[in-house]
Image (cartoon, rainbow, N blue to C red; front, side, top):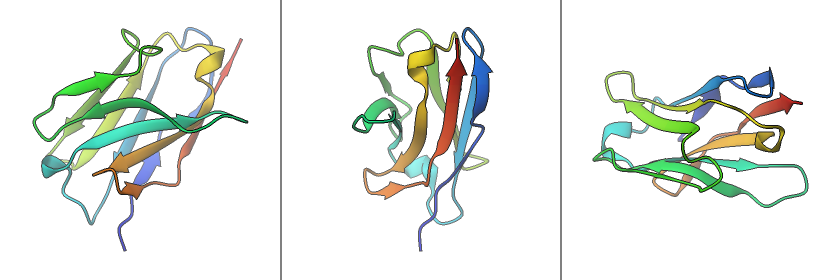
Length: 112
């Protein structure tokens, strides 16, 4: 059974930063396209950022310039560095691998 495990969520004030991590013991992230998605209360899940196996990145317009996705292949971990957080960034953040596998999510709450 494939498992993706997210961590790093929490409560932060507006303007603050958090770093999310995603790891797996069953998938090699170095050869996988990875992504972060989020789902706010009452809204559909949306793309936040993706990174290809070649480390090309793509971001939602709403997070460009504030969030950075990266990978550490040696640790088989993908990160989402989130800076200048806004209350509208409040959501459950999910890690995705190969557009198939999902983690259970980690909650990010940004207070105003």
